[in-house]
Length: 406
Image (cartoon, rainbow, N blue to C red):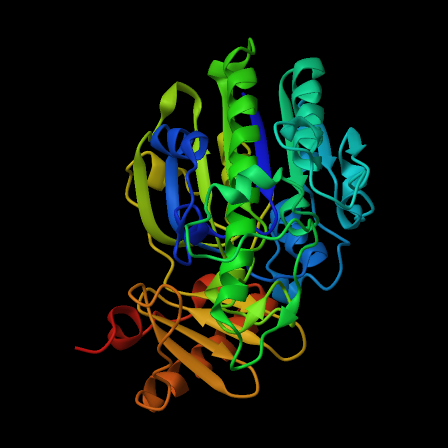
């Protein structure tokens, strides 16, 4: 078996469709999703990239990933059974990551060549297009079996898609989209102009359309590859990109709201196992580590206190759903997600009903103080259990925390 992991930084699951009032057309992604198994409730366990990758490559939750040392890595375990491993990335934090040395080969893609947008009709001159050309070249030249791990940070690095890509989302009466390739990163004023957010939403939508165009070219190249029928393709996001939902335009202070921490996860298996399937199971990054090891028959090669293989869901076998996820942010920020609630803990606590309040518009913490207290206790208990390596032993949550209020 072979596996290709496409990790797109700053790609939020909710933006693969509606981005504010803008509907983004993503035909390549839609076709891939229709051929794949999709996990709709996937959240990263931290927005800190260097720590997040300890979850992906070590199966270690962010709360215990203060160090990259110790434990067998995903590329190391696969190399031991004869899998050729390659990392392709345009993110310096990754090619210099302490765990990157575990790959047989690391292809570092230089930062964008220009600070401006590509000329109209020349999307191949964009940074994203250059990245996908490198990925396709590596795929075509790789020895099998292979793990090709590709992390692209360009959605958060430069918005250099030709102006026509963002202009397609412009409607008469709207201000014209800007011609800047700069990625915004600032806190909006409480009385900010909605047209400002609209312009950036259109620019981001154009960049996502560019990504989808590049994805389509990659999928075609993969389909023509001799190993296509025996390759697992994973597409996920490392972090989302806030577009004004909570006055954040860009990462800013990395506030742990859904627009930052909820990401897509799509798995297309050989022989289309689980095609067109969907799950609302709560998924964390370390689950991908466990799933890849399981797919290669290495499920018992390493242990993790929280990671769980996703293959039972894909195979429609009995699976025990996870009842909580813990997210760790900068400083003292923490968040806990259950099937019914999302609690963000910072200077104060904010509580949102899930999955109904997708964009976390209605903070109900004041009206549900008992729920807030129970979730705070559950988060503390779960963090202690993860650190102690006994996360599987925590008592199940109460019915209210699982199903919500009647």
